[in-house]
Length: 208
Image (cartoon, rainbow, N blue to C red):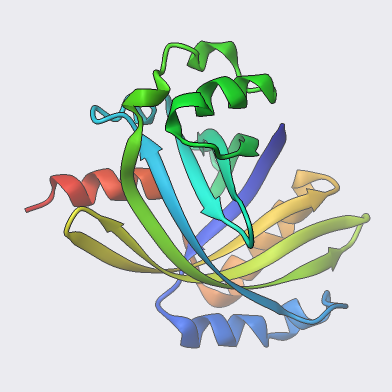
C-alpha cells in the first residue's frame, strides 16, 4: 500500500508552468535534473460507475513490457487545506479485468472491494499525459516531487485538455510541504484543484 499526500493546482498552460519551474523559490530547492515522461492511463469502472461511488477507480498504466493496475481511492480535503488530496494506492500486474480485483486484494487492497466483479469492469475514460518532474529538497528533511502535467482526458467521444501542477510528499512532515505550497500559491496566485480526474470525466460524460 502507498499513501498519497498531494497538493494540486490548475495552470493556464505550459508558459505558466515554465515560469513557476524557473522561479527562485523552486530552483533553490532543486539538486537533480528535471525528468520527462509520457504516459497513457486507462481507467476502469463498472458501467454504472460503482467504484466512483466509493471515490475509487482502477488505473491501468502500460510500462515497457507489462501493465500495472492500481486501485486508487481518496478525496480532496475540504477543511481549510486548499488543493490537498489524500488517498491510498494498491498495485498489481494487470492480467485482465477478470482477476484484477482478486489480485489487488491479495496485494493488500480492502476486502470491501470483493463485491466488484472483475468481469463487469470496462474502460470508462483515458488520460494521456506529458509530465516534467523533479525532487524538491525542503527544510526539516522533507522531500517532495514537483510535477507539471499537460494532458488530455477522454471519455467517449468527448475530451478536455488539462494543465496542472502537483506537489507530492515523499518524506517528512505534511506541515512543511503545506507551508511551502502556501508561499508558492501566494507568489504565483495559483488556483487549487478540488475535482479529481474521475469527477471531471463524469461531468464531461453528462455534459451536452
